Amino acid sequence: MSPRAAWRLASLGYDAYDYVAGKADWLAFGLPHDGFAVLAGSALTTDVPTCSLRDRLGDVRGALQASRFGMLVALNSEGVVMGRLNRDALDAEDAATVNRLMREGPTTVRPSEELEPLVERMRRADVDGVLVTSSDGRLLGLLERDRGEQTIEEA
Image (spheres, rainbow, N blue to C red):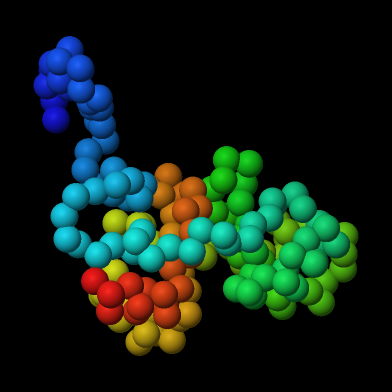
């Protein structure tokens, strides 16, 4: 909607927003939408364990061992995904930093991606989960393939 239309609606007592970045960016942030499309954001697991780049392995070892995902998501101070700290890092010294041990540049998708073709790609590649980030790289959650398949069946 145009800024003028948003102001007019506001003057009539409605809550109105002028989202300048557009609909695609709105959806890429996983914000609510109308319609019937089943998107990746509808099947997210949001309780993904994280760690900081500056954390030392000794500080996050317990969380990494306990993670049902077999990894921690390494975030910078702004919550942007920088990498994955996988269980193979458990062999390192406790003093080693996440920044040194993580696998950089993990594959990510947007919450606006259509779920069915995404799950099919995951199935073909034998991938159990993929990180979901906003368009500015902030972690929103993890799409687990089995949860995605269940969401598709229920739609």
